[in-house]
Image (cartoon, rainbow over all chains, first blue to last red; front, side):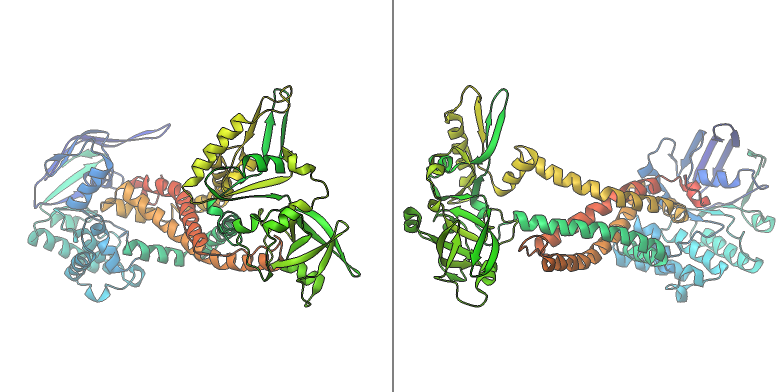
Length: 221
Length: 407
């Protein structure tokens, strides 16, 4: 499902060159739940951003669903992100001016789909995370856990085959973190969604199929 | 679209200070442009008593060109008599003099007014509505009858509520009998504007009838608008064949039968109407530039504020093009709101202009055409000021945007 071969990522400024990732080789099978762990600054989020096509590797090859992405144009990358990938961020990144329903609809705005169907799918996704009664609320009217559930609804509304979660429980207390992990495991088990999750929490990582460990930009396990 | 619309309104509502500053700049700009459009519309569109001017050609300048000198003047009556009156296949042709200031003494009062000398055909080409009486006739023109048509404004000044028809007014030491009264004409209607019209044959000397250059303007009423190009070509041929009266000083003659717009263009921008259109458009864009730059700066300063949203949209499949479309849409919506406010303000400004009579007798109005132009200007302004910030926003790297950066 996801294949990375000899991936390097270098950040260059005028004076400094920082090697964020070095020689990463990773295969994630369809339906797998993989967690990425490592100390702060080791390149976990960078790796997730590369897999999510939000950033481009400096060298090496990356394929999503057997489709190489190196050199792909903006429009094609946008379509791949829209159709194949869903994102859950640590700080939720909900648009504060939009209601829960409007936020969840965002991925569907970039598909040719009638408004009624878009709305139906969005409501179904909101229902799936247990927030039907909050569909017309704004993000600031929700708790952190509820906001992250909205973010998950937004990530799954387009039925992507891959879900990328960047420390999804990082800003939540343990109980809410548990709730979010339960939803992610359910998605993985019931819908067969491939999940790649960056986490600092060993407890949550141990419940996934596999742990990839990074240290100073290198893959150590 | 619905989602963009809702978001646009919420963004505008959330950032009240930004919205106010933006709307203020947009409104001031658009008010000036809408008022200018109303004035230009009033000047160029056919309207009583020049409502037939969509099929009227005029000649108001003749240039004698030589290697060392150029002489440009109005055509003389003789020129119009020889080369305009005789054009084939026309409905009517007329000559009228430039308006000249006169003083009319009546009883103990003294009134300043503008005088035009013209012919009987003038009243067929211009569709004046006669409040009282009639125009002077071809017979009166031929006889050099001392008759006059006056404007309603002058009638009120001279006679107040007493009847004017049949009364006599003294012009240049001679008494002219009033035969007709017409409504006041705005100064912007150059062919129609005056206070007093008398037959050209009342000039004290007939020398003017033979002048090649003078102070007259020629009017040609074509049978249909389709005839205009033919008449212009025919006249151009005639100009080429005109004898040069002083071949030592001049080598050729330049003159053209123009539509109303071309006539202004000839005065303002040489020979080409497109140059005047370009000039008007350039002035409008120049005028819009400063407030547009202000709006661009405001929009750019908001990139950071919306970085997270841009990152999220990119992550979920927005291409650069769709993001540009979204932000330009928001900006156009803002300028359309500004446009709506500016129409209300412009209506008040135009009413004040009309009341103050800054442009003599003018009655500018916000009609559907001006409304259409105003909407077009507002949309252009929205695109003009929104495109660059939208392009910058859409080029944000998704990763940086999600981190809250602006690169």
